[in-house]
Length: 241
Ligand code: URA
Image (cartoon, rainbow, N blue to C red):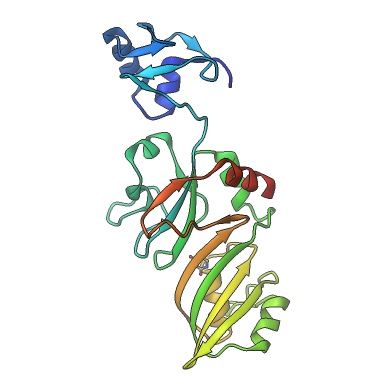
């Protein structure tokens, strides 16, 4: 990690503004290796020294990477005047850091949503050039069969004429005219899975994203809960691009 000004570091972490950092430093709230530092413009290497703020060690991370179990009824956006967004489910420090959702899930879709403040990674993961596989669990109103599996493999043409890339449809069960399926796609068109299944005459009743690349929704997370990605999960995402 490069040497950085303390006020810039604390602001980047969303702990306070740069101006506030100067005031905290004057009050004696900042220490470097146990020695009070009254000058917030001092430069340190956060990997080599122990920075504390209000007595608490500051674990500086250049970027944060989160997985959220997105619940139904919440927008995949950073803000909205009327409706709750996924940012409202996270501690305020993440908003201050500029965390944003990587791609979107519809308001009525639940499941894995990645969030980060790493613009480069976010851009790569959503770029059509990088074909990251996303797996969805859907229940659809209609009895799907082998002809639908074949149509997905060939590439579905949506009702508006849009051609989708080949995708995988796995039928887990069909009961009372409803199909329980897994759909794997490598692109992210608007309402894509819903429109693909609708094109086969089986509108989606419920939709949940299970995984993105090698990152799988943590079954310990209830809807609305989140956690930071592990180092392995971050590495797996980087490997995808
Ligand atoms: N496809 C959809 O139709 N909706 C989503 O939220 C994600 C993929």
